[in-house]
Image 1 (cartoon, one colour):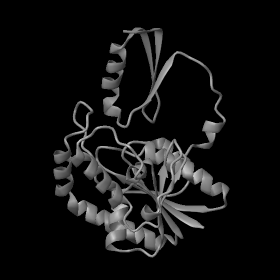
Image 2 (cartoon, one colour; image 1 turned 135 degrees about the vertical axis):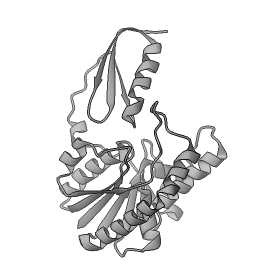
Image 3 (cartoon, helix red, strand yellow; image 1 turned 45 degrees about the vertical axis):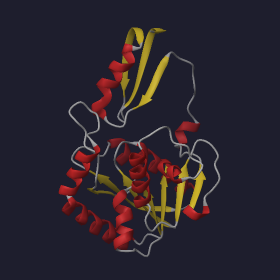
Length: 254
């Protein structure tokens, strides 16, 4: 089967899930014919992703949340206003996605939570079936319990999630705990996608904190917050996907 990936480029989670899915599909004899990644002027495609996919990668303008100079996400209304002002770019992206799907000869599209893929299927109705993959689809599960949150924010989150999957044949909701499938949502709950190297990594004990940062701009703030809770010497290590490890000597909690 020939398969096309369309990936939301915000953060690094969906990109690494795409790498894992590509490994699984290739083991089963399927062919990845191309990868489309939504981008913006505020984020760039990391080198590790380009190196690991081993197929042509094309990018397109996609909606995103604006970062501030301090690395925090800008207000929701500010981000919405910015994206509305750039609607012409996104219409162009939708046409590009539709054209690429049509010319790719793919038998299946796998969408990793990219909003414009849902809009493409809503407006152009490509004949190629689409499957959506993300942990965010678990938000649509009737048994999923949210922490206390503004009901308007929850409504918008669920609405956004549904819009990414418009026209999909199946939603694969990634979850660390077993939950039942939801037929009325065309949802199957599946374990998280892990790359092959995770299963071959040697685990060793150590006095480290390990965290994942969705945006490089928040690195300094995250480090400062962690250091406020610990005494001792901190040694900082950061790799290309904004993963940070801090070793604490001694690890004394204030």
